Image (cartoon, helix red, strand yellow):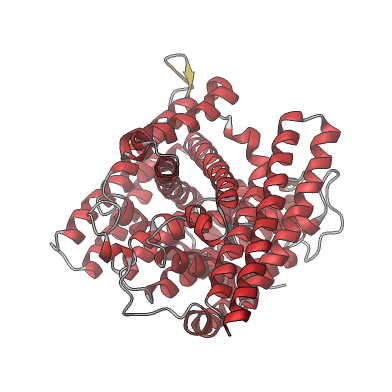
Length: 557
């Protein structure tokens, strides 16, 4: 199968999804109102609530939800063959992710920009809210702790990426001032920012910076993790326009340029999909494709973390309610495009089937390594770019997206502590600084308390991220569905994907439960049971609320 043809099919289908399906969802289901006064305008404070140009906000939203996950998940899932991964990414983006992300923004905007966990108390009930907030906290804890490890590993493995990764922060600070002080127009700033980023990517191989193997008795990885959390803590309390928005915006443009380079190389080289279309000869120990495919690929098809960003930071910056379609649905399309690229390079970026099989000799292998090596192979052979430069480009893409997700993730974790302070009448927790310290403290406790001196504790609970994350997506869709029923609007466009997602997620949790039991992993077994019980309890609460609202709507009609 030609990778170029597969690329064209995927992009055309996603484009149809945006121009046709998203318009229907926005106008007929969510009924986005251009005249509705959004929380960004109602509560504008210059810090968290900031009315924002939809293109800039799209950059923030897209790069925050993207992270490394739409690279890692698809590049692992091709072990079952490229066809199932391709189908789930394309149709998941169109019918699941876009509807979910736009709906979460809309639901939050209509409820004073509260997070989806917080507003569950009003829509469903206080018990559901308490359970939901715990699930949200677990997801954020996993994302922040693990992405710190991912970025640290990338910078240890690819020292050529250190200068562009950290230099992007300086570029973002300058761009933030240029945009919000109206010194230069947005198009000019955009061009300058992209040029600066790619100049650093070009310079990176010439000035590799390697963290020493040991610093003050700590490993190089651990030092990077501490520096990353220090940076994320500072970023999370700065006004969003200073660093978060411009960093995410310029990274979004950088991704588009990177994807154009990658897509162009695929078209020019037109490599063959080396990986099997459907792999029936999987390595020993590989779990069943159904249901694990649907939790291995989360970001890139649908992800609960998107709902946290949509209802956490994005809804506080939405200038007009109708912008939710562009920011939310097109943000999902952008992430689907990245996941599609990951599938193509992880399936076609090898010289032979034997080389591909060597990369995928066991389940869980591939990921970022397959993306970087496969993508560098295609760019080098398709465009003639030196392989080390191509590898640096793709490494920086992965690291920058993981970094922007960490920025947003820690800010969201801070919001969770602040919302808990409001719910449980603990005024000190509602302040940004104490809430940020609590957020960083819990992440570091997991990273170093569970992982020891190397700070890799987040990897211990990472096996549960896929299921917990998809559970969160299903529960977010449940809240949106209950709101639609209450407003007497069609609910099947959210109910159908949530039913599919909850069924697959619960089955996957049961599969993992058996696996943890057989391997004697009692910690993950206990955590799996907690997540499974939470899923059942919240689903029952939401089902009862759904029935209640349907009965009320019927009695009033």
